[in-house]
Length: 119
Image (tube, rainbow, N blue to C red):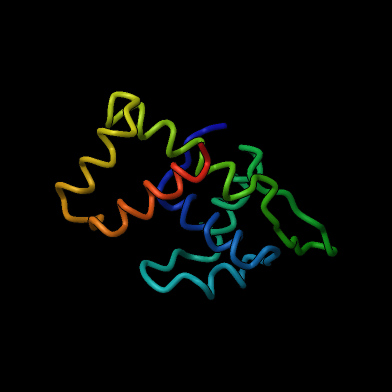
């Protein structure tokens, strides 16, 4: 599975949310830096070539839908990010977020409770 560009990820987030959409539907969901219709259509076709999206044809119009689940992509992306930025250490990742004050002590206790529950 290839890493997507930021714009491709944005489009996939919309397709995961909508489940099925025509290009105009995706375009309507983009609030900032809205691309031209043809540009968006090209991005979606690229996603199809990469194996993330498929379509149903209705004459000359295509309705697109994701074939890669968000959970599947998130898992791969997170594993790659942890390998790349945290030396494959989940401890380093959690420590980073604690130091950046992105996770609270209460949230860490909740995570610990989840871990202990599984053992």
